[in-house]
Image 1 (cartoon, one colour):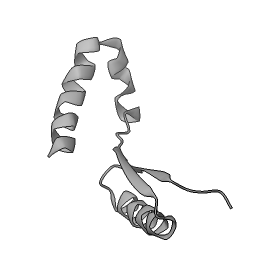
Image 2 (cartoon, one colour):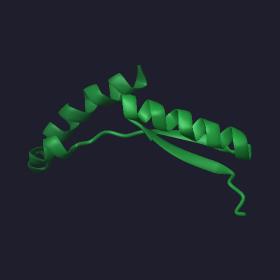
Image 3 (cartoon, helix red, strand yellow):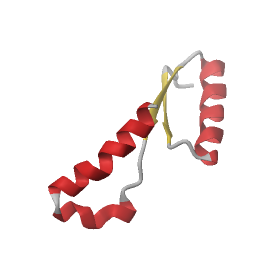
Length: 69
């Protein structure tokens, strides 16, 4: 059986990611592994902003602030 040392769990603060976190934490405890969380953001609805570099920063600034909080 492979040795699991680290588990990467993406989270976006949704109900689904909360369940994924619980599962990752359970597996991590079982294997005595470190669980790493990575906050992810779906930028698909904002794809049109790629045309304007400043618009991308305007979009990501508030998202970063909310993620930090």
